[in-house]
Structure formats: structure tokens, C-alpha cells
Length: 389
Ligand code: GLA
Image (tube, rainbow, N blue to C red; front, side, top):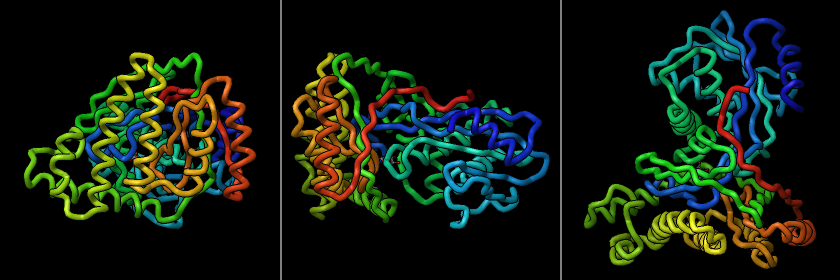
């Protein structure tokens, strides 16, 4: 599938003519700063060249038509604009539909409907943000086609998050939609989620590659476990606020946390807060290390991040731990960790150029033996954010 084929499919599905426009929206990988974005901490993601292509045309009536070439060819989900409600039977189309709902909720009502077709090459459920990619794609397509000049790319990211929180029911932070909307070729984004200030940081690794390995595991109940972590962090914050003047866990340095962690009553809740505080500090350190070209220290912090996500935040799973351990045992791997929300999905590793093949071979040999699954290995190219093409 490519853009030309998508256009052909669009015309076959909806007919020719009118103002048909094409767009692209990336997926993302987070290098470090996991589960910090809803704790007022820092994250360090980048946009991928993998992503979702979208094609759209306005209609003259009040119908919204959604179709995905990744699902059944020719299948269209039709929704009347007077009835913007989440419905399980719409399946994936709840993501783009949620954007129309979110815009309406914010006072931006479309004058007429549209028809759209998407196709993506981000493996589903891999923790590389296929849903945020679709959300920001939909928001961008609408902003462009209906000429909504009041919305910039950051607004589109926030609308994506609002829709995911309030329409699709996952209480996610802003990292994914931000990374997808604001991505820049060959740069990662150092985002402070407490005030949304950010800096681009060039990633020009000469001797290393960023490698993503997909475990092919997707556990059910991801959203409920995610929401539970979020609530535990909020409990910890409330308990700490009895003594400390802080707005988020991201306001805490390690010493202050250690001196006050006794305020948190429950052991598990204390472990969750510990991760949020330490991971935020690790992310700040990691970006400093990268700026001074100290890739080794960056890698060590990635490893510490994994251990904390595995033991304190408990969002890893046995299959992901196998992948990380294979990477750790491979000479030339500088750092490796789980990336994204967790409970399956992908690992991200920084690997010396001449160790990439060795890592691949080991994963191909050892991962199926230990898990019965085949993993997939990708070398990351960092791309631009959502755009018309
Ligand atoms: C998911 C969420 C993000 C972020 C990560 C964990 O990807 O959508 O907001 O919380 O998990 O870092």
C-alpha cells in the first residue's frame, strides 16, 4: 500500500471528484520519561517515519464516513453528525469520531460531513501510538479542510488527548498526541508536561542506531491498569501535599521525596510515586547527557528506567523483560527499556552500529524459545509531525 493506492481505493469507495486531500501522521517512540506525563514531569519522545496516511473530502450532507484499509476493504462506518456518541460497534472509528465530538464540545461545529479513508503501518497495540496518530491525523484533516485557523498544532494535540480521555475512556497524558503533532525530523522533543514548554534536541547518533523491538504481546485490561496507576499517583500526591507545597510529583527532587515518602501510607502507592519522581529526574539527566554527547550515560539511565518500570511501577511483562535481557546481554547495546504505556508492546534500545545484526540474530533465536512468539525488529528513522502531503 502507498499513497497512490490509497487514493485509488478512496475513489473506488466514495467516487471521484471534489477536493480530495492527503495527509500523514506519524507514530512515536519515547526514549525516556515513562509515566511522567500525567505527573507534571518530563518526557523525551520522537516521531517516527512509520505512521498513518489519511485521505478526506467534505460532503454536502451531515454524514461522517470512516474507512480503514487496515480493516476490511470496502467497510465504511457511517455516523450522522447529530448523533456523536461512542459506540462499541464503531470499533477503531471511535478514535476519529471522538475528534469530531471533542471539537463540537469545544464549540467548533462542522458545517457538513466528510468521508475519509486511512491506512497505517504502525503495528497495532505495539505501544507506538497508533491511536494518537489517528487522532491527530483526524484533527489535522478537519482543521485543514474546514479552514479552522484558530487551531495550531499544539491545540490539535490537546484535542486528541481530550477526545481520548473523555470519548474513548483512557486517561492518558499529553505525550503521545504532542509527539505526533509536533514531531521534527532527526529530533527528539524534551517536553515539560507541567507547562507544555519544550525544546527540540537533535539526535545525530553517528555510531549508534535506535532500535525498536515489538514483543507482539498486547495484554487486555491495559486501559484499566493504566487508569489505576494514574489514580495511585494522584493518591500519593494528595498525601504528600499534606506537608509539602507541590502541585505535581514532578515538582519533587529525589532528596525531598526520600525525606517525605513516609507520608504515603500504602507500600504500592509509595512505589508508584517513587517511579514517577525518579523517572522525571532520570529524564532531565538523560537529556543533559545527550547534549554533551555522553551516549553511555544516556543508555545507563534507560536501563534504570526499565528496572523502575518493571519493579516499582509494574507495567512490564515477562515477554518484554526477555527482550530487554537479551539486549542487556548483547555486547554493543548501550541501553534498553520498555517504551510506551506498558503491559506488552515494544522495547527501545540504543545499539552500536556494528552490534545491530548480532542483537537481531539473538532476538530471532532466543525470544521464540523463551516465549513461543516471534518478535519484530525495526531501526528507527525520526520523522516530522502530522501534515498534509
Ligand atoms: C501511554 C499514554 C501516555 C504516557 C505513556 C507512558 O502511551 O498515552 O500519555 O502516559 O503511556 O509514558
